Image (tube, rainbow, N blue to C red; front, top):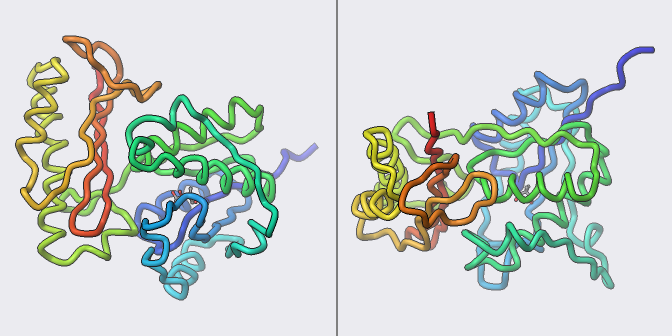
Length: 265
Ligand code: PAF
């Protein structure tokens, strides 16, 4: 019997950048059929967030998808996905209450809802998510395990610009001065990593050396060193688990996130 076909799903909100393309490329390597979804999902935005100003570059996205050899591009429509009367919620509370979940309590419920709907629609064997959204991929893995979904969640590494800025669709909304200030997020993470590599193990001192590197135009939401699995803040005197430094901040009107791993060996 021939092996069953593998279907790779790459869910996105469009405004595709090199990070998204790396997900598609990974999916192309592993799967017989690759579906790309583009849908700015309203249920993961709260009123007052950037749903309306989220970048939209559909013509360019379709050209990039074609160039990468995507087999199918699917464009979601809100009124079809969420018709009147829609009322189901999906929640992974223990992972969604921390980090970004503190300021965006609605967000991960909306992400889980659309991702679960996409899983049902496409029945993929594999689904691809970037580690820039570390909390998102961790929550999706939990949901997939808890609901016994036969889908392999593939984590793909965060991709940076050559100057260190983590790629994000929202970067296009930064003006040159804001972009310059935003660079201090990755600089802060690198400073912590350097201190870690030179032997510092105390989470408080590590965090302080990162915060000291932030540009004054950066409005810090959090800088936390968390356990890689549970995403809970490490508050022991010494870090002795696989850890990740996570940061979220606003620069002008643009909310950015980034993270870097602190490996034990
Ligand atoms: O990471 C994103 O772009 C979105 O949160 C996702 C996974 C496509 C769900 O809307």
